[in-house]
Image (cartoon, rainbow, N blue to C red; front, top):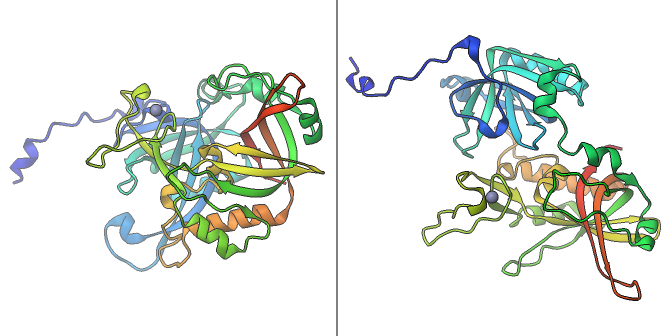
Length: 351
Ligand SMILES: [Zn+2]
């Protein structure tokens, strides 16, 4: 009846008893997988029924989007819907747990081209015990040394001692014994610009929400290598050039531009560089490609508003945040700093 179907290559059916546990960096579309991950962020949204079943009916379907990570810092997105929505409260109650999700379907998001993991009616979700082999294999922290040996210091001492951490930023995953934890207030935020761009205005506690919305509605993202975050240039046809160090991997991902964070503790103030992934964390983990999209199909509110609110709140609340920072001083012979650099490694905004 449909002879053209015969010309399609036969797809090897997947054996339900032999579904592999996979790394987030090695997903293949239209396969069933198990994953072992931590959940770093969860949000719910409403999808129209038409999106789900292909038929147009009134009313929306509640779904949840989980941002998940594995120990090698690979991130992924898990979409829960249907019966799997019942997993959400337990996940939200146990933020530090390592979860084993079984029987998820890998689907390509047509808009962004990214691979998402979708719950299936046959799936399950269980927390793993801390010593579990699979938890260790997939979710052992990449920075265990950093977690245990970064030490808390106040900003004034850091500046007066001109403390420089062990300097090997190229080896992020190797042992780093010398990062510092600061507890300070955030007083300003500014997207960094390159010479071809207009300077993005500094946002502080005096900036009205409309002003912040103006900034985040502007050019605050770039296309970079999906693995190493390097900015990608385009050729004459507007096609992204590959990132040569990462070949054969050619994934492209949209990132927020790096930013500067102005912080103070007492009378001491410094300016800290924020890499793109942490800009996203500060902006409530909203992926940059979503900024122009509506929060819900019937809503005028777009994710860019959520991002503006997040920044407004961060700067106006003036609460204390915990920052893990790599500091670097270069001094002249009179030990006057010529260079002082601070790079944000992590931020904990929960008060
Ligand atoms: Zn790369």
